[in-house]
Image (tube, rainbow, N blue to C red; front, side, top):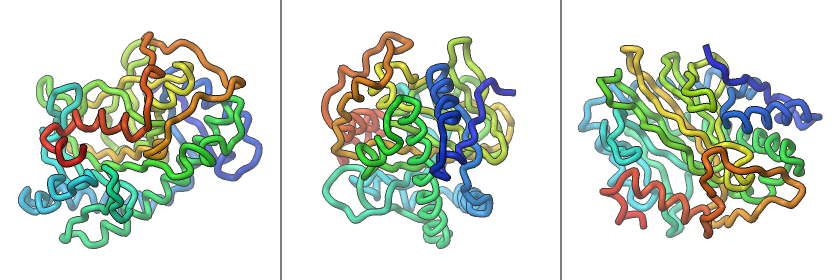
Length: 313
């Protein structure tokens, strides 16, 4: 069981009155920064195709997966990494994964460019890009609810900092947990909003004011959580909450986090004076950071793959 709320976001997608939905989002963001999203309209068939492609990819021999290793992605920071290849809080994670982002021609900016897809699964490209388009639609709608919850126009973000968003997507495979090896160590997310698809295997844990709680998979939902930038914008009123993963199921676990963040060159000006804001729960002042979101993101991701840092920065 979970104590995290489930919020139906259909009113936000339909464009009709959404005051009740916005109030539910505010309560969740103030309490833990985590909630489940239902009523999102992402086709179940597309989710099934994505899951199938992911399982087929991770079943490939290691040498086949390494043909699209992240080192081949260069400044775009895309591709495959093996188990232990990603660090969280300085420790290797017990997971392997694929990094994707918005499909664009390289423009000289780090983390921008074209994705790498396995030749052994040719349909994966179309499935991933369709999924990204669906999740961007949902994320913009949920951020519209966040804006309403803060007393702002529904399009505050979509017409501003996410008019040209930074979109990052991961597919992670977690082998069964071993001893104290965490699938992902305790961390917070960097940007505005994360939408997480989980398979049927539990493992996600969230640190709330009452302690660690499980966030198990609920069919037909995404887990949504806010990131550091929304915490920063609200002065800590909305919480960017630590979370972690330990796969205790004894089975392989897949997860699909989609990160919907400010535009690369956005400097995220403070919210209007009418917006609400309070002291952050742990006393940290994320407003101390100045610069663009791209600057902030580079500072974070360069610690995750230190061996690739010089290729990106």
